[in-house]
Image (cartoon, rainbow, N blue to C red):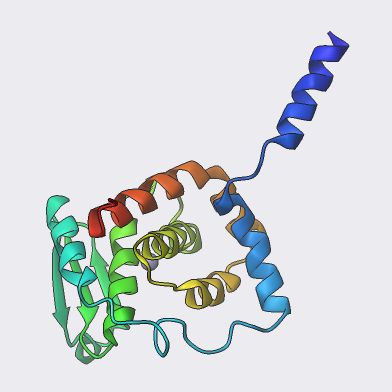
Length: 183
Ligand SMILES: [Zn+2]
């Protein structure tokens, strides 16, 4: 009996953490080392304009409409996600890579567990999905994601990432593969 308990402990201690479960610690380290300055969707990365229509098609598959409009005139920031009327609005003044990563984030909200409280917990879920999905089709948004999630209280961020690691991985893979089917 004692041997069994020991074996179980050893097994769980040796089980490698999923990448999502290491994300929170990586964010803390990045923040401490001060490398979260600047933007990772501009500059050296190519344009991911080709991904936008794929994401719009993915939204339509889930019965959402995407509009690229001037939403600043209504006093909103870069995006809107109106779940009841299934409408996602992306601001037309953002750069194309910023629009792509923002749209992925908004699409991720479609899959958020309903038991997740509004606000920070839902943002952690959506932003983690967005980062891994973008990475899956080639767009690196790590700096923006880390900066955004560094603003969430650490225990809350860690709890969401740990609890929903498998779902985050599943949804991000689903979006990435839809945008860029693997050979
Ligand atoms: Zn959000």
